[in-house]
Length: 316
Ligand SMILES: NC(=O)c1ccc[n+]([C@@H]2O[C@H](COP(=O)([O-])OP(=O)(O)OC[C@H]3O[C@@H](n4cnc5c(N)ncnc54)[C@H](OP(=O)(O)O)[C@@H]3O)[C@@H](O)[C@H]2O)c1
Image (cartoon, rainbow, N blue to C red; front, side, top):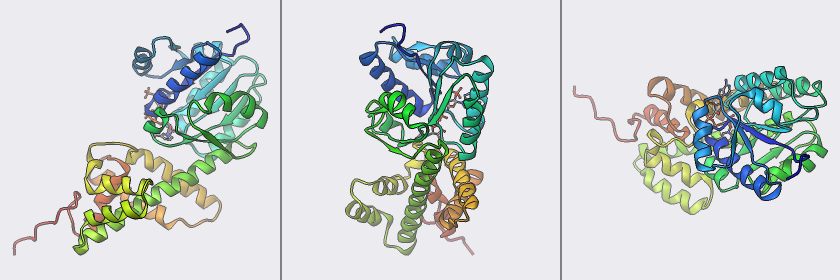
């Protein structure tokens, strides 16, 4: 390590940031030797990571991040969180030439606003690298990275930190950071639509008397190794009530961005609209479950109980 070695920071030690930050830190230690600096609004989450990886460094405030870091990753809940954090960093003043890389899933228009804010600040740069894959894939360094922004910055400074430490490859989407978010929302369009399709298909089989377990057998045989058997399993076994892989409320944020993007480009997405209706009804009537919990509503519409069991016939 020498005095020129950039300080890398990671802001947002949530479910996925916790895993990504660990892998980036390991990579930095084995290459530059300089530990990762982490920050989280709720300090205990950053402290939990430090307990696991003792040589990781904690910045208790965003001022410390702004003062020390040259390369800053953010992975935060939503548009409001990303704007608040970046506005705070900018108000403290970033070091000249600082690179900010946002990995959150936010609206493409918000990403564009961040580009405009940051490019006028002290020769700083903003690129977007949202990710596809759950925390378990992040832990296994198996995320898919969607990268867009200045090619020189991405190829020389950012992707060498992310690949292979957090994922094996990046899909490159050109110079405009918002394109990475448009790709991310397109990806989540496929995820949410597959969940809706499996919910409808398993309900059809159950309501008709074929049995949803038979759908599991068929999906295992037709689409082995894909997410479809996994979604089917979460519905058939009703694990969505207790095991959260992707909460319905987070899926709602993403589906809202997907529908706004479709509206902007005059694209009709009826599956997303139906998914959103089912999601809203489950959240309002029953509570926040895993995304596969939309099946509770397709079951209710078919006269079944939310867990797929048959409703008793009311006595006359
Ligand atoms: N989990 C996944 O499978 C997955 C996959 C791909 C992409 N993503 C995206 O990655 C991002 C993070 O997701 P996650 O699952 O890690 O969420 P999470 O566990 O809920 O963590 C959210 C993070 O945002 C921080 N935060 C929220 N509001 C804030 C605010 N106003 N100011 C500062 N920090 C704030 C939280 O800090 P506190 O701890 O203080 O609340 C936490 O660090 C989201 O945009 C999500 O869509 C998630």
